[in-house]
Image (cartoon, rainbow, N blue to C red; front, top):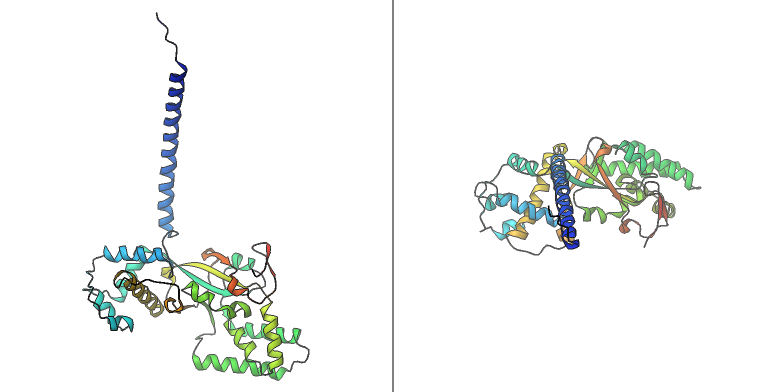
Length: 322
């Protein structure tokens, strides 16, 4: 019987091959888990979110339209396209989709939409615990009265009531509210960041209450107080598309997306981030937003201009203007 001793290099090679096989098995298991996890993510819509200003969204939209049953025509009337004429969709699709088809097309590929809400709460934790509640204008009027009576010594109750009446009249004349209770969201983050006054005052209604105060000197004081009260915040929510119940608003959003798609992939125009490219469409929600739909929050520098350092109870740190 002959014994064959393993050469050190042979032993090293065998150990290496054994280790390689072990790694391959483990990596295979992890890949399967990742694939499964990816399917779970797609199933819940986490990875399929509509973001208006996202370049990736336009690229995905191009693939969806190109692979759809619609035959595209590229002899689009430039004038109709630029003027957002109602029939411009008919000129892009040889078989124009109905509004119902458009909704089905998007809900088939996307399950959530990312929306943005500017605010200035005293604390952020309640939002993450209880969600976003409908804005009650009467409650805000009470907060405005409390603000004036607690911070201004020489106030006059008649001036407070004058500001409230003027703001109510403005809202009624412009039909800015239907039931008096709602939450306003921006579709485009860039548009939300261009509206810093809402984060300064805590909302649009408080903004008008403060700036409708009849005495200029007190109005300036109130503006200064509001500028340094609360936590200037942009809350980002990811809302299921099926919860967008305002069909007209949804159609406007889809139409703008398709216009951006046509700019990029039909006219080959370079899309930039200037104000002309920003969507100003807002979504008014008439029901509370559950906490599970709150994705994250930010304290944009655009909201922190000319204000003092503040503490965020959710971030657990003090934040100052850079």
